[in-house]
Amino acid sequence: MTIREVLRYIDKNLTDDLRLVDIAKMVGYSPWHLYELYKKHTGKPIMTHIREMRIKKAAVEITSGRRLYDIAMDYGFETQAGFYKAFHTVIGCSPSDYARHELRAARRQNTELVNGIRIGDDFLKNVIIREAKQTDAKDLWENIFSRNTPAEVEERIANNIIKMKSGNCIQYVAEVDGVVIGNILLEKEEFALHEHRCSLGDVVVNTAFQGLGIAGKLLEGCKQQAKSWGLKLITVHVRGGTPAEEVYKKLGFIEAGRIPKGIVESWNENKTYDDVFMYQEI
Image (cartoon, rainbow, N blue to C red; front, top):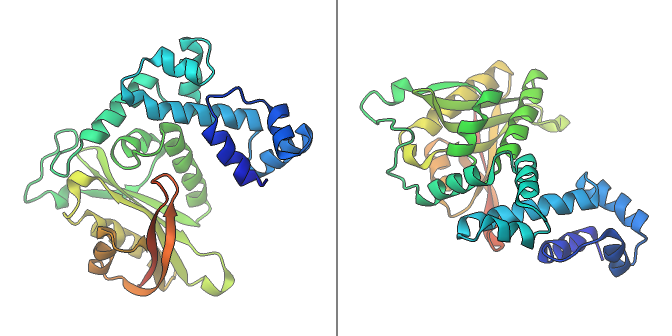
């Protein structure tokens, strides 16, 4: 049994009494060997990772209407206080804040405005493109990376800031009226034969503001940065058959090739998309 199979087994049995010695016996490893192998693969001790997996699985159930106490008991927490503390450590906010966030995300429509921002003739002129800051984490979680946890968003920004200081990437956000509503990441390619290239990632505009030119404004900021780096090409991978593919074409990207079913979303019932590789000359 591979570590990936061990992970799948754990994921399916998170409400059971999982112990290292029992899992090791099941897969035919010594507890020490499984511990070392698991930590090498995941970067975390196995029981720490199981605890985090339980919290994240419990977070999914928080909006179901079930009592918090019952959810905590199902995932091995003897007290609600203990669950609350562990939840805040792993997720980065309280269970109630997370529930409110998920409820807002479920109700959000394309026509809904964020924090009362009004769209008018001068709207795009008021959009500021700037480098991301650690203090943007709350807005990015609320408005951009809603599928992630606050802790994951905090870590993502922190890592990008380190890379920005080294000159290997730039993360821009689109801000209007003090609220972050868009994001883009530009990274230099490290392979020696690709040193004239850079790639885009994390290109997201809040649904309420899509189709208003924000993605183009974010891209323009990236193109100016790429020019200052002396680069010649911007590349991007995109899910084929989605609106994003058409958006990139409108932004001037050209398809270079595609891998049928090259993208599999493990969190979305293994839904597959073509992996479309696109580029644009700077």
